[in-house]
Length: 204
Image (cartoon, rainbow, N blue to C red; front, side, top):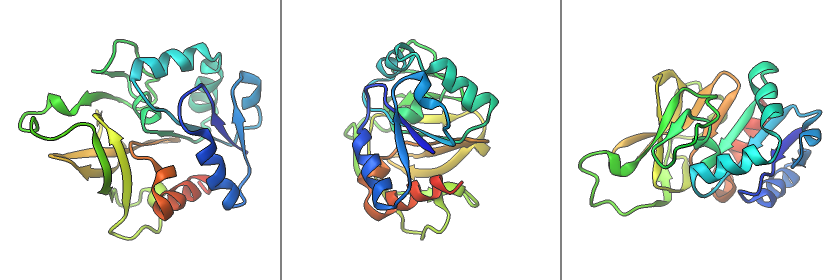
């Protein structure tokens, strides 16, 4: 059973609607007991890094999630800020992240030569999957997804990069570390591209 983690951030219903159309069962988890029986996890998120970590830690689900992901190796998909908190830390805040993927989150403003670009990076953009990336199985070359962010995930290991996009510079827009996956864009707002990615995740 896919469980979507409800800690007060992210459009939970949009994901439920996608999976209902695909006739794939999904349940909402807002308490540690709700995580029992999870075969896959979705970690959505919007807003600031520290606020997301505060809400997730306060939910009481953090110890159970750590166990499911790190010990039982249940596949998890972090989305938008849900991807960013997979990192060890962020320039946006001071709290440690989950640390499930080795990397840090940096502001676009940290990179020279990008000062004239409007932030946040908002709208549709091309995504180039890493060859063999399971999330993007069957995707054509011109796959496009909807973005809304001012921070990017900088992987410590290039092998953790699942896809890249460009906005003034080439940046990592999807990560993968064993059973941990993340995407910076919003699949729930990305029409058939997003539906295909969420279907791929359900079939891992």
